[in-house]
Length: 271
Image (cartoon, rainbow, N blue to C red; front, side, top):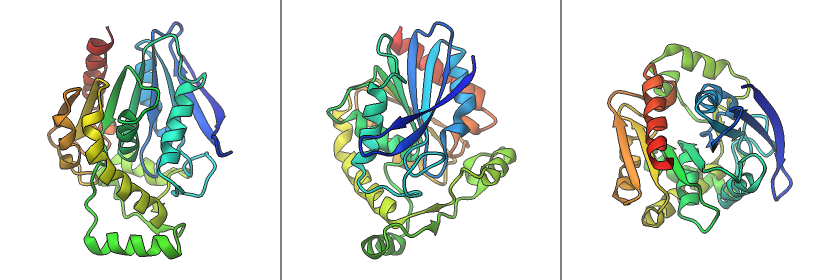
């Protein structure tokens, strides 16, 4: 099993970086959607974990992130993110002859939540990791973002994320800030688009019928565990909170347990 990189062209002409990890004879497929500021290369260990368990795993750098094209940390319309997921799901990156899983983290979890409630090709199962259905921004910053989005939507502003918010493993934060592909800034345009998506997600939750696992760290200070709590009301959703774990639950010292739990849940749903 090895990593293969490639490209995918979006319907509006951007080139996205793609990565794949695959078992020799995969019986399932998975599409991974990373979170704000990061890129698919930070998910290598997750891709390899599931490839070792029989998955053909694909991931991509979302537009404006990593090695993909697009204005850094910006989106013109939030629906562009959903279009990218749909087009990748229809592409050769996701095998059509086996059950497939959509796995989204943080901002990617918000995007995947809306995708699961939309009239688009649906996965056979989904995993939402710390989905950012709400945020902890003070009202003053929210107001400032809305104002700036009208006059300077692409202005780059520091996002103030700290390494210790990602994981209790100090090496994770150190590698994050040493990574030249990681973005430590956001834009008002993306922030306001996300605000709207968060509002729509509350109405979208009852429309989710795909078997979905929600996982969240109980010590997450970037996306509060309360943000994912409403998802538990959907009959198709199972939710598990890990006490003390932080935002990147897949990068915590307990990562083997977390990924093992996800694999076990998927085994039960896709059997």
